[in-house]
Amino acid sequence: METSDLSHHILSRYNAELEGLRSGVLQMGGFVEQQLQNGIRAVAGGDVRLGEEVARLDHKVNAMEVSIDDDCSRVLATRSPTASDLRLIVAVIKTITDLERIGDEAEKLGHVASRLGGLERPTDRYREIKHIGDLVADMVHGALDAFARLDTDAALSVARRDRMVDEEYEAIQRQCITFMMEDPRAIRRTLDVLWVARALERIGDHAKNICEYVIYMVLGKDVRHTSIEDVEKQIAEIRASRAGAA
Image (tube, rainbow, N blue to C red; front, side, top):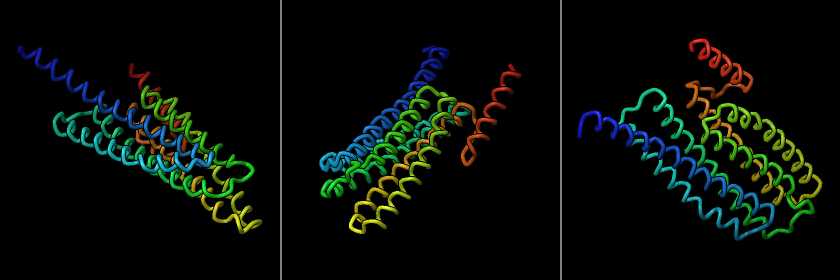
């Protein structure tokens, strides 16, 4: 094989390995999404069997994280990636960590659903949980979509929604405290509802983290611990600088 052909072959394999990392993240993300949706449905619908299944399948999420992490380590060791390729690998490693933690929170939903299924359901049928659950599920889906398309604008749009989730969680907190004061018999169920809301709020945080990794991967800017307004300003400055250079 001539040198040029060999170089092309090596480059093709390298690109395939990088694409394999991205595909692995999206496959893991799809499974985590399903776990989350099933967990929300199990709690809202009082489905004990579905809740138990969600809790039981968490090991698959863990296995996916380990497998993708191993693939990243192998690429780092054998390819010595630089610049944007290195950012991609770092973003993948961080993203799968957040996806694994979303899976852990979904597992909690499954366990709580198993407990709540044996209790009398409230008249509102956990409407508040379904509402915040829908918000969070949309965030996770949007974050994964932004990752797939390397879309910083979409990532910013999803990250902004985290405030809505926080506000919804605070409202549920206040509501739960009121319920427990009015009816001490409902304390056990109300604490479970509060625990579910807290798990969902954390999932929103993890989805926001994934959006930050997308921005880092595309623009090379670490925007963790930065307000959305400042992130928007920094992105505008980077784009203006690149446009000027072109």
